[in-house]
Length: 244
Image (cartoon, rainbow, N blue to C red; front, side):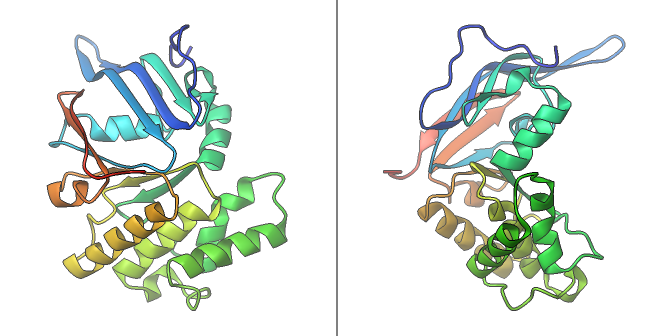
């Protein structure tokens, strides 16, 4: 079994992310590394949560598990009501494509695909989605990020800020349950970073659920809820502003 789920854990209505006593242990020859220890975290629909902490505190491991790129060693994980702890690799890939949009620090755009094709790519893996439906979703998401006039451009023809906007468009195009943003401003100058943070806030104000990992305290506190990790455990979980 790839991840052990608690027999008592049940999904709660309105909760996108539910982690119950979730732990991650990496085992070596003579050493065990406890990357995460009994994490309890719930993120409800419409929240904007930042996860912060010093390098090595477990942020990246936690985001990988939430993003279904890795599995927990013990505990439970429900994603949009699905028991993600019990899924095999192919089932995780399908659920990830349907429920999660990713925004990475390094943009992760494919250089020989156009802006349109980069945004469209995750949608091509959805078996029951018509080409015409995907086209509408791509164009709508590029309109949201202000790049509807860059459909035929390649990543190399865009600024760093524009490339990250394409990445955001790709993340939201499929209407996922949650956006996971991993240091979304890490490769940007201050002007473009401010633009991306403002875009994230706008998306959230319009109902998008966001979980952002960052080492930058100022960026972290732009979210509505602030979660801090230390040595693989949650040490702070504060609501910064009204989420109703």
